[in-house]
Amino acid sequence: MAATITFRPDEDARRALDELTADGTPTSTAVRNALIEAAGRHAKTRLRAEADALAADPDDRAEVAQVLRDMETLRAW
Image 1 (cartoon, one colour):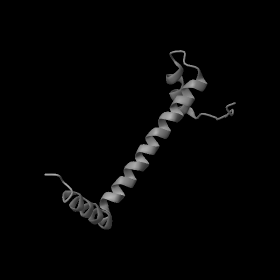
Image 2 (tube, rainbow, N blue to C red):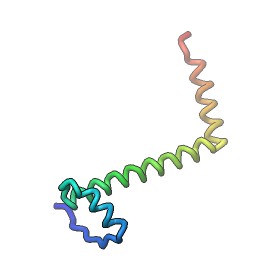
Image 3 (cartoon, one colour):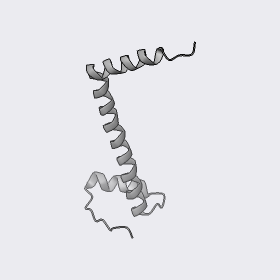
Image 4 (tube, helix red, strand yellow):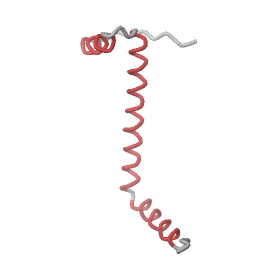
């Protein structure tokens, strides 16, 4: 059974909720979908920041370069 969550929307959130429910979508569905979409964007942003940090890490870049050199010696032709 899902938990019930209560929130007090400010004016911007109220307008957004009105937009999301204008087509008859139930409020709980609109809020649920918005949370899932926001979490997905948040995860992508976090992963992008982690990838950028790794790409900027000279030790990691050196290790990647070494792995690529090692793999080149394994080529069949």
